[in-house]
Length: 184
Image (cartoon, rainbow, N blue to C red; front, top):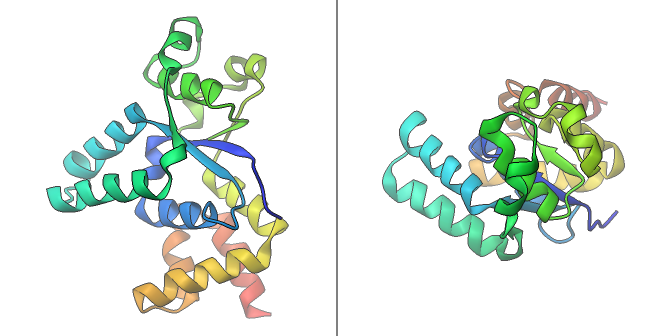
């Protein structure tokens, strides 16, 4: 499967290094989806990396630079006009606005409570947990997901199983499913 399915990735997902790495590698050609975010979302990621996770400034800047260079088409602009009309959690209206403006059918977020379906349905958008989305991608394209996991493991000097065990703390269904298939 090669897809042009547009997905907005929330800051909480982009700030999680392991999940972000896996998702963005699956968004590289031959891509399984087209990632989107706004500069506001990237600013949130920067604050999280710097203030909450304590990343060194050089690493924070490198992440921002690499994300923008790797996916220049991902940035959604002009979304601010939608914000006043939205009814989801006030702190995340900018995320929904960016999804609307970017033509995204899905918002990937760990924070589902800020995106209740009744606030999204009129826009044809669903909020989906990264664990559920990765399970779907794996069920559609298991070979491609295996290859990407193997590349991640190789770069980190780890076994694929160890990468999955680490990911299992935040995306347990996906990790368990892939680990079961690896054991076969």
